[in-house]
Every structure is written in structure tokens, then in C-alpha cells.
Image (cartoon, rainbow over all chains, first blue to last red; front, side):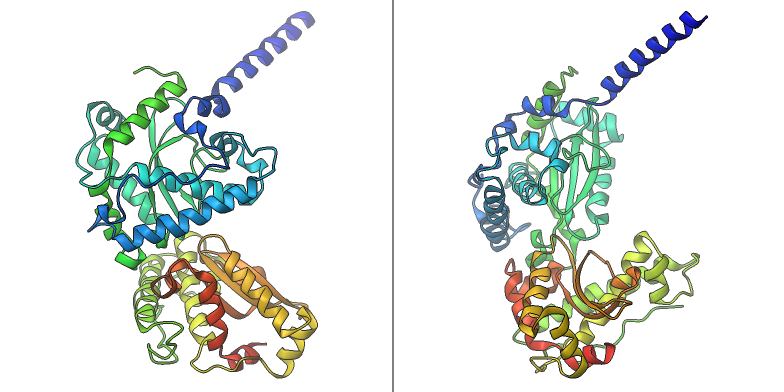
Length: 249
Length: 191
């Protein structure tokens, strides 16, 4: 009897440890496989993939210029400053994000500000919008029921974010898409969020992203944003996220 | 109880050139008004239907807190400002600032740093603690010092909408101009 109890305890222990291991994804190992893993806290801004005026009339040239050459540039240089000479200087930025609670708050704020804007520029393009291609459309249907349902859930996340922050579409550890929003410059890779995932699509709802053009009318900005989405880029990131997670669909 | 948007204590162009009429038109006429409207819509059928803004600040959560506190914060902010304000406080407040911060200049520097460094949206405050001591604090988003038992004396709104049309990313310039339009008489009276 005694022996049996001991044995069952041992089994329970191993079973528990096994389950814990399965449910807690190894985000450090996962993000290593993403192409953005090459970014470090010493990285520079990448040139914008289009001209400042390319997103007009939805986002005006002046907004783009200040957003890219002032806000994004300041996050980048402040991130570089916070990392220079530190042990994490050459570490992948994405790996820093997955343990960002162990780093100075300047790394979280400015590193987040650097990467979130980097992704934001990538997932927009002039004459964008329309519908995603088949693979991504099917994943969106599976997760949200329909493309319109996804659009309204994402728009709602962007509108309901009180204060400064971002709306996100991310891939969770099971390969499922989900919508979330984060305050300030946090992102879904960081352990401080409610639900973690690999972000593949985002919308900046800091007032600086739209105030010169839309002032208090964030809803108009969010609505017009759909005309700018670079769905090919989002799908590329979706496929890459599945590969990093080791999921074949 | 239906909450109302209180009138501005000065004309919409009165704070020019530091804060433009256009900024005040949006900030007061749209943002402040929207917080009032949202609050009136949200409190219907809740325990806060007949509550004062102060009660809402102390007890509410979520949307009711956010909108209620933002109504209060903005009214307070307008009343901290005036055209051709004095450059420094006088009397007991001036003495207390000197005691607490060493000098008015040191206080200004510390308050400005709090306003400039607040990450994201929010407010910088000069408050009086229950023990009488002055303190400079930062509050994110709709945060309000009453909730922590502190008495607000002066505030600077550093949501981007407070300065973006005039100063864009240059928040430090907005904060530098803030000192040229303070209604010190009102701050002294609160103290």
C-alpha cells in the first residue's frame, strides 16, 4: 500500500511536470526561428518600404514623416542607448521581449517602440487592403467565423484601447489566430500580456499615429486603415509563425 | 444625475500662442465633451447613476472610472490655466514649495521632468499629502490623485491630444510653455 502510494505520487509528479511543459511554450526557442530574430537592441531603423506620401489620403505625408523620423527614430536611439555596453547588447530583441520583465523598463518601452513600429510599417502598403489570400483567409475564418467578424473584433480592440497602445493579430502557441490589445509599447511576445503569441499584424492607436489627420476621430482612422493592409506580408508572417511553432496545417 | 460640460474659464484663443484655439476646440469641444457624453451613457442603471464625479473617482472601475476621472481632470486642468499667468506662486504655497523642493526652480524642473518622462498618456500632478507635504506624481491615462487620498493642486495633461496639433512630438516644448499660463491664484487657493 505504502509502496503503491509512493509510486502514484511519483507518477503524478511526472505527469504534472509533463503537462506543465506542454502548456508552457518555450517562447525563447520559438522566436529564435523567426526572421525578425536577427534584430537586436542595437539595430537601426530600416528604411520605410514606401515614400512618406504613399499612404495618402488615409495617412498623410506629414504624419508619416513625424511618426517615422521622430517618434520611431527616438524609440530606436533610446533603445540603442539602453543596450549599449550591456550584456544583452547583441541578444535577439525578440528573445529579450519574451523575458522583458527581467530587463530595465527603458528596454521594454523603447525596444517595444522600435519593434512595434518596425512591424507596423511592414504590414502596410499603398493600394493595400482587400482580402487576404486563401491560406490566411481560412485561418481567419477558423478563428473568427468570417473575415468581417475578424475585422470588427480587431477594430473594436483598436477603439477600446484607452490611452496609448496597439491592437494586434497574433498566432498563439497552438497555431490559432487571436486579437488582443496592449497599452503603450507592450506587445504580445512579452510575458506581461494576458495572452501571448507571435504578432503578425498590428495597428498603432497612440494619438500621434492619427492626430494630425483625424484628431479625436480614431474610429475614422481605424476604418481607413483597412485600405492600407499588406495582406501578403501578413500571410508571410503567419506561415513563418506556424513553422516556428512546428505546426503544419 | 446628468453630468454637464462646464464652461471654459477663458476664450478658446486666450492661451495662444502657447496652446492654439484649434487645440482647445478639439480638446474641450470634442475630447472633454466626449468624456461627459460617455459617462452619462455608462452610468445609466448602475450604482453610480447619482454619484458625484469625486465618488466615481474614488469607487468606480473601467469605463465609468475612465470617463468620470477624465471629466474631472480636464475641468481641473482648464482651471489651472489662464492667459498672462504670474510666473511664480506667492504666500504659503511659495514657502511650501521652497521647503519641499529647495527652490521654485528646482520644483519646476522636477515637475517638468515628471510631465516629459511619463510614458504614454497621462497627467503630471502637484499634490498635497494628508500630512501636508507636497509631492509630484505621475498618473497614467485617467489616473487621479484623489484615489490615493492626495489633494490635487496643479496638473499638466500630457496625453498627446493636449499638444499634438501645436507641438507634435515635442512634448518638452509644450511643458516649457505650460509655465507661462498657470493660474497660481487658483493653485494657492487649493493649497
